[in-house]
Image (cartoon, rainbow, N blue to C red; front, side, top):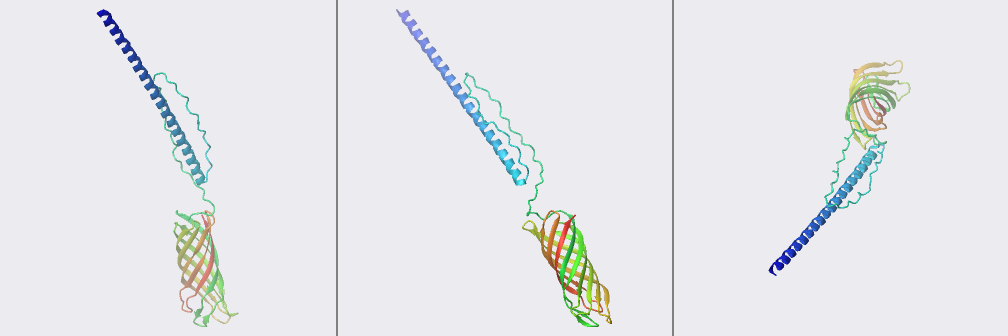
Length: 285
């Protein structure tokens, strides 16, 4: 009787232990399945983040091309299909690693300058210009005949030089001519070769303000009426100028400004000076 009771007790213990072992294994399997599901969701989220990063990168590239005035890059189709569901097999699934997309190195691009927004150059270049103006001479005292009053005249000339950005140096040849206000009293001509220096600053992208000075020899010809003495003198002259300019293209610009010109005095007459409004057409070489 006692042996039978012991056998029944041992059998009950074995059955209970077997049941507990099966429950433990089932719990382990449930935990593995939950871990696999969490890993699958994590992988899906990583794929979505990678897809969003690629979309943002494409959008930034297209925006950069629009700002630079370049041709838009072709759209790259990004697959949007979600990964297939993974069925649990009792083992932790292995996912392929997500590789980081390599961005191509930035290449230097040359941005076209929109019309109406041409910036002032900052590098050295050469220029050639022609100009013409309206000259308003002052009175000049001629020792043998008295004060000479002149009518308004004109000026023409050409120049060339080097432009360093905000500073420039060059040379010009100019001709000024105006008649005496009294008929038959003759006229005056001034031919000058000036060495010029100037400074300019840009504003509103395509416009400039400039000032300049010049110094050089001038041939002064004063023609008097017949019976009176005429003069032909080489004198030192100087000029001061200022004005505004506008750049039409990368190589063509125009200027309009004021210029004061004066010669030194001679033994036969005082200095000849004048005011002028001049228009300049300039070509960069």
